[in-house]
Image (tube, rainbow, N blue to C red; front, side, top):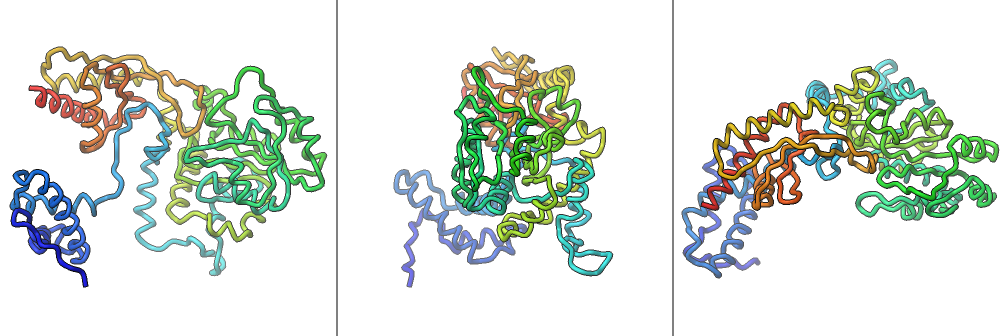
Length: 470
């Protein structure tokens, strides 16, 4: 039996804390055992503080604070933030923001049942991907498509289902590692496919592939260097030559494109060195896989397109069931596919709209932020708020050398780091940069509707810091 630890008089008893929650309208229906666990942790924390500084502990104040302590721990696990970094597909901030149409679709469908795996025409079971596979077919002019939960899963499924126990040729310059220490050789090891490295880090020729082929070789895997570039004394076989040779040799050619960039004129002008999904498909790759939540602009997903027979083999493999996506991902992806079928996609998908926004619009946005901030601050001695040229990045392991012309609001101060911390810890949190003694808020990733909110949060951080200094 657990021995009850005696509470010092300066600390509230557990039952007092529980009662303080029961008096709150939004907390009174919480499970008692959950509140009790939180109360014990709360008391333990303050017991340790009381041992160091007894005078800092006030019983009545702690009883009053406990409901907020509970709200913080049982409230939303994730919060909406303002991204003022200038990195559009910020991996730590959820990558591509979804269009507002997704919320409306969720509200209309997810509060009830839907025909996820039901064929309304026949009255029998259907398969969940079929409607989206059809849309992808018309959008990209491909035979078939398979959707899994991210692009790493797509690569793993392809290698496991189609190459287990067989050799796959990969250029040494394409043995990628992406975020989270995800390394291609380790994926091969998990899949059971045999990795055969060809060429060197900086130069791989068609002859390197030709010389590496054996009777056990099944495919060539090309991986797009989406988060790095090798420049200088380099060589890589032309895709057309690889397609022709693999077909003559009876091998498959698979492309891990990663970025998911579509053939959108406005986007291609900004990210001119990034290949598109359509280019890879037209070139004749047997399978192409890419991420749904990068510059494709949708939810996290791995999308595989290509030969129908290969896609069928992927769907029939047991691993597919473990990697398939849920109804929310499919609904969000459905909305994004609808938008990609329209010429206005660059205006309607947030990530693409951000990357393609003109410098003139950004400058106007930054001036508005500056003017609002100065109006809120009144006069703060020695404070200079400037609209300055800046650089934005696509991010998300995409176009690593492409610098997108941008604009920011910069405020120089020795307390810039303190401001940045206050911005992160406010409501809503703001993620900005501190560079060379300046707080830099890049407006490329700040939506126009967020400008007044950002101005308010900046004013709060600056005035809070001034008050502390005084």
